[in-house]
Image (cartoon, rainbow, N blue to C red; front, side):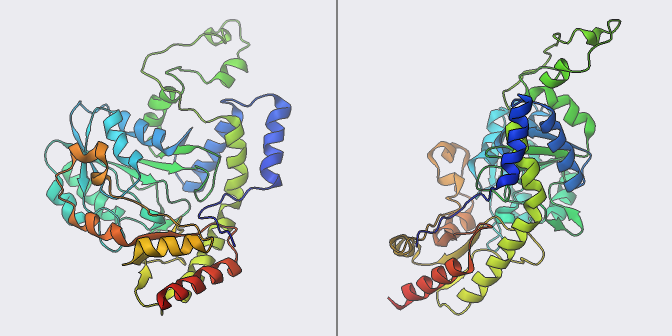
Length: 379
């Protein structure tokens, strides 16, 4: 066998949507992007969404919306993808690495309180692997300390936490539609908020600072008495970036969103099978406290003391694996922001192994992986 770690699930529905965009000869920032934004807002239950080319861009713009003074600090978990910590740096702010909870790998409330000082202006909790951070406690802490909260939902789409959608608890929720995620647009992301004003203020920033979307300039400006009849006219009042989503990506997204519930159910079934299969394997335990009946997970992982040997063994059997993630304080670029004061993160990651999980993963493939985990423990 040759089992992929992640895999997008794509079909004729996506091709039909793309074909429709081809037929209309509109493949850039267009009406399908707007339609996707509206559908996503309805799905999450937020008042406004802004489609961009990545969750990285979403995180950047979310922090930029508050125009924090240069040099202020943003609290981020020590174990996350680099984009979470790059967002403050893009905005000339300083990332402060907070240790993680040993079981959920989400930001530690105890260490959050220790790392906070008067220079901190925001916190970016990550719903690691799809397992919710203690977002209600984080929001309560943030209100007391006057911090803005930006949820990194790159691993999460469609989960409710205490009856409310992840991504809709905070000032901004930032989602990823990169090819490996719960649903995909090829590459892409979404910025969500109940603060319509803030979304409208930063909207030009995703389109090089231009105050009118191209498709709006091309359609509907027919009243000669109105300034808007000058469809070619726009103004640039803020620093902008080329962060927009395009209609081809939005076409895929519109189809994928309709399938997301089915994708998540398939992943949940796979996790149940994994958990049953590994429960009696000595020396191997689940990466997270999986509750697949409640939450949607992007990755399935295990913890094993002989991680590197096991990775090589599984590779020899055609089973792809990963490690999510090496703690950011260990990365050369981020060392200048670290004081080596995240002991839990620096210890637990050494046992992490990510196993294959995607909505097309078959029961036969999971059985093969589990059998090889058992075989390894006999070696």
